[in-house]
Length: 90
Image (cartoon, rainbow, N blue to C red; front, side, top):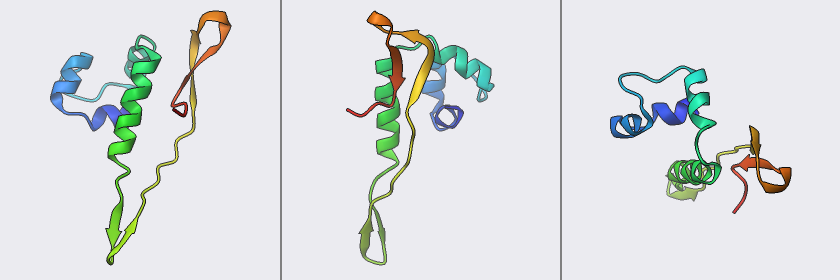
């Protein structure tokens, strides 16, 4: 997540409440536990898709693959007690 924050522009940092540097991992964690899981999942999916565009090498088109495992948001529960899963398939 720190890499994602680091790759954003200053306007995004401002909306997240950050100013002149990438915050410590604990600060990012405190932010993430307050964000809606569906909104975070959608933002991460857009970020990954933006980085997985096909690459042309020697006239041949290759698909760039980024492997990401799913994450469970610790302490977050849905109705019925189910855990909140980030990066779930859509």
